[in-house]
Amino acid sequence: MDLTTPVRRHADDPNLGAILDLLRAGFAYMDGRIHPPSSLHRMDVDDIRLHCQTGEVWTVGTPPLACMFLTYKPGGLYVGKLCVAEKARGRGLARALIGVAQGRARALNLPVVELQARVELTENHTTFARLGFIEVGRTAHAGYDRPTSVTMRLRV
Image 1: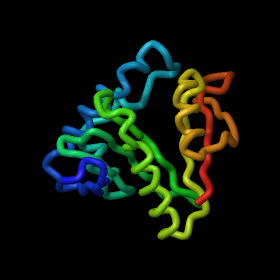
Image 2: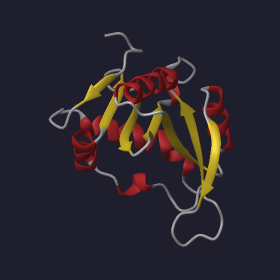
Image 3: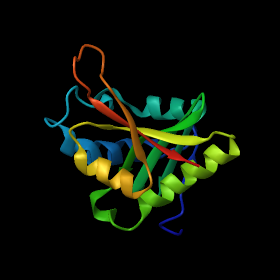
């Protein structure tokens, strides 16, 4: 298998646990850095299975070296849980996944791909800007009086 070819996962995939393992390892650096903590701490394999049914889950590699979740929203396609394993960074895997998101948005006749990055993770803002995303707003999680997330969009 080509290690840069994204593959859509389905709810009956027996290896969904490997996606959860990738996410936990890939998002671990955020612990103690972002507030509130990542929703990943509440995620389990059943949540991934459900997302395969209600949205889309894409991975690269077996076991997965990168993944993203796509959610259909009015006016755009939302990219969540974009993650590339530390050992696979710099190989264009995030760019390949965002390319899939752009293609899916076009197929669904949606004008933008949108994502959110935590305010504290400025290196992610830079990465997404290099991929063509621009900041369009900031939002706060419930109970916070300051922005906690940066919303970024990419026109397709």
